[in-house]
Length: 248
Image (cartoon, rainbow, N blue to C red):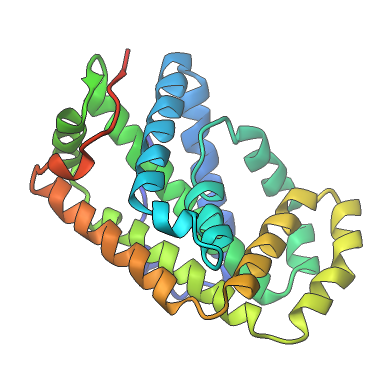
């Protein structure tokens, strides 16, 4: 399985370089899963379980009139089950076009999102190997989480949500960016970049709707760090109410 590079090694690279690196990485991870259908099925089940956990933890944000659209974007759109292999392959082919059409800020959004995607995929794979053959309960999940460890990568996973949010927050306050996105929408869709472009535009729109993102991002960060700390200490009580799930 591909090993994630320490983020510091790429931190100063331009978004184009980071986007290409992490897209290659996540494509390799998913090719490995597709070669093992049972693992792919278990991965989808794990992601569904974890998405439910995110929904429970941030239910108030999901139901908020102000924060709801942003919560669904950051907690659902960015983390979902299903095979994204075709999307990854399409993105690799479309990178040169994306670099021509999207502004630097749009490429930065994609680079952060794909880094988060690759990191989540790698950590989920390690969780699957630890949980294999078990019926997952809150207690077993907490034990697997602690056994996998990778605290620095877990912290980076949380940081990336905040970094992506702050990039989109800054973009949403640029008065002419909305007009720019509308102008390149047609060419982007004609070039086969409809999904890619829609992701950037959707992130821009939810942050425009939300307004200042500091409180929203701070709440997510503090809650996720508290959960990470509890799980690293082996405390499963923070997951009370989660359903059991069998891993083959």
